[in-house]
Image (spheres, rainbow, N blue to C red):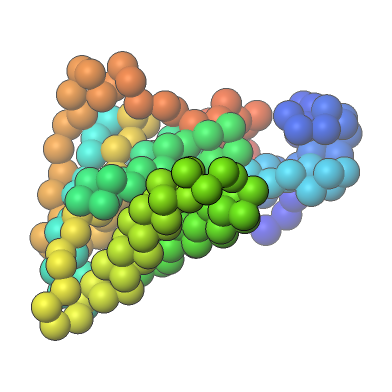
Length: 213
């Protein structure tokens, strides 16, 4: 894969002349041909990756009930415009300005959630000694909730584990859960209106990507 220079400033450091694009065409079973596009700045190290299907996709949602160990291995394609959530635990990750796409499996997606929970828990622990004593009970309750979330995620797939639902909502339709039990649906009008679409990429069109691939 060769890097191709693009005549655009870096959205982070505004440097020009050192922003490149790498495009790689691949085939994902049941998802079809897609182009993985990475844009990177050699000045500040900023990098953004996304996945563009060869065929146009409509906005949609995917869900999979995780109630056994086998489903932890289901492949997940998550684009930079996709909101990922676990409704039972009130967990949600929305695409922000630095959102990036990835291909993983359910277990890998859950690991990302666990990393976020651990980061929030560390922040609360750091606050504990700095707040007034009457605020510590609230912090303790929040930390206990986070620990219960971590325990639920860690026990998934095991005997007696509480099942959860992995939900992907993508207004661009570039995301998917690859499993026979995964359910696909259209997004509602309210979802289309309220869902964020992620970063405004410098180049993420199929034509530009194909010219670089």
